[in-house]
Image (cartoon, rainbow, N blue to C red):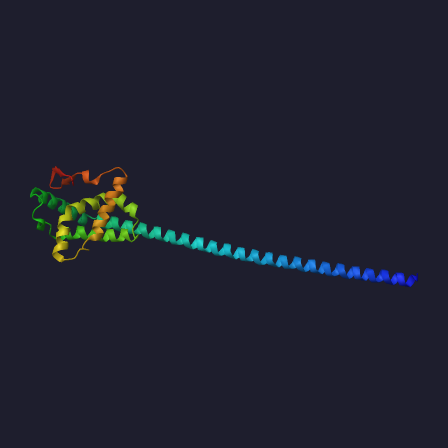
Length: 212
């Protein structure tokens, strides 16, 4: 057989072999680059999502802290109002009027009049609204002033219901009523029945009442 023919066949086979190998390697290299590209894109997207989640978490935490600070400030404002000498005197007056009211067998509801009565009912109606709308932390307020709100409501309940009828306006002082009910339930869950607590007469300390 002609040796040149053999060499040519071998050369062609080598070339074909090299061509096939080159195409295969190029194809595998392309697929490798493509996989790396997808991985980089996915990694970038995941990092971006993590950054977004991180930003959202930080934003939520900032909102939570801001809300807590707002509620603490609301509680301090409530303390400043309810613990002032003027408002303490207004509550004393309401307690005295309630004792007189019960001595008359809960008749003559018109006895509850004057600026002191108006101050007390307005104070707790506003506080009720602020607690109800989360401007004041509910549990903190009820823990500190819940029993006081309940007592004042029980003292003024007949008077306020009379005013609702007289004014033909049922929503009158509903936030005050809500606050008193929440206070009762809050302390009941803690094992205390506010209805069984005693209310002393500021003018006659030896006289006391309960709300049952």
